[in-house]
Length: 126
Image (cartoon, rainbow, N blue to C red; front, side, top):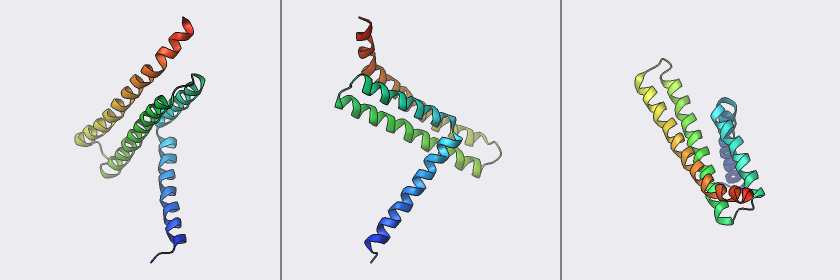
């Protein structure tokens, strides 16, 4: 039976792999950096407009959806580049599909952001 120390060490190593994956995505994917920039802006606006706890939960879930979609998209792209280094139409379709998933998540995030922030911004102008 593994000791508590060994279990903690295994979990820490697993988290390390996850952090390495996020570092890779941030370093190699401009879209991931754009998503993080927008995420930072949304969080700042959330504090500036004192959004409700429900609005925070919706934003956090939405941010998680977009970032997760982008990480999966990056993983699929890297895997296909490894498995099919020469261009192949099927690999192109697969990449387009995963990019489409990111687009769907991003549009949903934008709509939720508008629903939450638009009324608050409009109050400033009335």
